[in-house]
Every structure is written in structure tokens, then in C-alpha cells.
Image 1 (tube, rainbow, N blue to C red):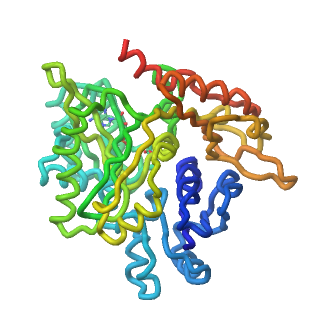
Image 2: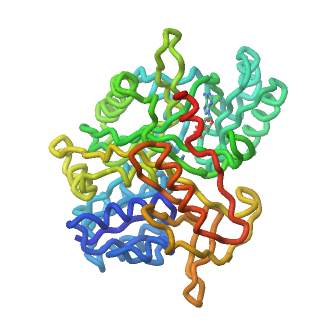
Image 3: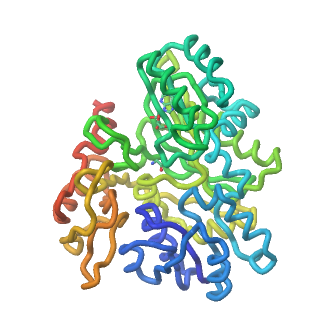
Length: 435
Ligand code: AMP
Ligand code: GLY
């Protein structure tokens, strides 16, 4: 069958490779894709905006597309799945991604918190304030101990969460947020308790009733080593996360994943797609760890997908078909036991100002690792150039995590472009925890 994948990042390149591996996939169209997806077997980039639903419809009908896989959250939050359900000529198309109501789990932090409260899912204590409740919000902050966590309710391009040490600064930030610092996204602000622990990402694929828990991963968000400096889209990832052992994952499943899927079902929210649960593993006081939800996302993570998807051995198109048909329990999820490490190369200056159009050399020299493209493009002369902040991600799978890290770093050195920067400590914190 023909399949359409929406998105253009490293996540989508990693997804595209897995989808194209399936015998069921004839042509994989990627809208708009990047220079990496454009070169994969069976793949074809198409110049379509994932937010232009009418254009997607025309394309799907004209190219006999049977399955649409949605990479990023924006089209989901804007209702792309509902658009497909609403049009009778698209009803047979399998859309992998939730409808607009389910997508509120990511689209509104307040919605997600209320959902978790209704279903007794462990998360930080919180209150939500609107622009008419600034003084109540300030009074609430004064009852808390720092650091203070302020979250814009709506989507704010990954910038809507502030963690502030000082109470006065928190008060000032809250006033600014409710005053429109992030536009409509911060018309309401969630103020929540600070959780101390280690973060990890858990991914779930669900048909709305049954689910599979995909390999765990950890991403590295800050630009600088030892998690210093500005937040980025993600500088690397590893999978699995060793402390998410059987006991911990049992807690995650019983306390979080099962109640989330049950809750969606009980509330009549059809959900066919991924749920990305951002977790904090908090020491339970007796040597164990308890999982708390920091956030839900309604898509896969980036750059976690770059280390999670290469570890999936099952045919993902087959998994997606079962998601669509509501019988996901009938197929096994087979995972490669080898750990994966992914390191992102970024443009100099990112996440602030950076230049594009730098020539990239050496990708073809990389051996035994996968290079996933994120911000790349083909120049007029056919050469590969940078076109974004996050440029390329090198993923290695190996028999141990240190070996995977070593291999990713060795191979990455072969890829060069002016201003290239990467973090040298991806995965190091987890290794230190083992010593
Ligand atoms: P979010 O956009 O919700 O993922 O938040 C961005 C980052 O802020 C998370 O990845 C965490 O590192 C941090 N964070 C969010 N909520 C909390 C919390 N309640 N306690 C501690 N850190 C948090
Ligand atoms: N890696 C975090 C995210 O995709 O939101």
C-alpha cells in the first residue's frame, strides 16, 4: 500500500526507515520530509504542508494512499485525524494519530492534569490560573517551596515551561505569562510542585483499548554538557534506560499506562496512535523509584525516536494496521535487545541564531551506524547542506550502551560542516549511575 508520513525531522526520518522496511509498504510519501527521507528506498518527498488538510486530502485521493502516519503534534492538535474521519472519501484511510480531543493531552497542560486527576494517575500537585486570577496565582506560589514550575497551558513551541528558583522572579514570570508572554498559549498557566528525580520517556502505541509499551529512552535537552545552558529540541538520546527495570516498568504500566488507556476509553475518546509519557522517576524512600507524569505528548519524541525505532524489529506497518483495526493485542512487539545511542549534530549558534546552507561532507563514510537527517536540504548543485538548527543524528546499536556510545561518537566524527557542534556526554549520566 501507499503510505503518507507527515513531518520533516529526525523523528520522521527514523520512522520512514522503519515504515519503508515493511513488505506492505509500496511507496512512502513524506510531507514535506528532508534530504534524508528523500534518499531512502521507496520514499518520496512531497511538497505538502501537514497543516493544509485540503491539500493532504487531494494528495491522498490522487495517490491511492491507504495509511497516514502523523509525526508532529501540530496537525493532530489542529484536528487532522478528525478531518479524515469527517470526509466519507477518506474514511477508509488509516490515520495513525489521535483525534483533536485525545490530542488535548498535549495541546492543553490543564486538560492533561485534569485527566490525570480523574484517573488517579500520579503527577505533581498543581493549580491552574487564568488571566483574571493573577493574584490567586501569586498567593498559591507563596504557599509553595521553590523551585517553582510554571507551564503555559497551550502549545508554545517547547518554550512554555519555566522553572524558577526565586519566588519574586516566579511571581513576575507568572504575571508576564498571564499577561500574554506566550500569546494565547499562556492565557492559562499551570503552577505545579517541583519533582526531584531522573527523567525518562516512555512510549505507548495504542488502538484506544489495547496497548504496547515501546522501548524506554532518555533525551538530552540542554545545549551544554552536564545539562547546562539553553533548552533545545534535543541533543541526543539513548534507549533503553537501565533504571527502568522490570519493577519500575510494572509501576509505570499499572499506575500510568493502563489507567491512561482505560481513562481514554471510558471517556469515549477514540485514540489510535502514540502516547509519549514524560516521566520523573522519584526515589520512594526505600531504595525504589516511583514514576510521576511530567507531561503527555500525543506523538513520538524527537530525538528519542532515533534511538527507539531502530530497536523495533516488528513490522511497524503491521502494528499500525492492527492499531487501526482495534486488535493490537493480536500482534507481538519484538524489540532488539541491543541498546542504542543517538547523538545530534547541530549548527553553531543553535538554539539561538545560526546560519543555514553550510555544506555537509562525509555522511557516506559513516559505517555501521544510521545517519538520520533533521535539518538538511539538497542545494541546487545536488550537494547536501544544513537547513536547520538540528542537522543530523548518528545512531549506533551495539551489544552494550558504552559500545553504542563509542560507535556513535567515532562515526559522527566523519561528518563535517562549518560550525558543527554536538554534546560529548550523551548517555554519560546513566553510565555514572551504574558505577
Ligand atoms: P515539559 O514541556 O512539560 O516537558 O517540561 C519541560 C521540562 O521541565 C521537563 O522535561 C522537565 O525537565 C521540567 N519539568 C516539568 N515539570 C516539572 C516538575 N513538575 N518538576 C520538575 N521538573 C519539571
Ligand atoms: N524529546 C522531547 C520531545 O520530543 O518533546
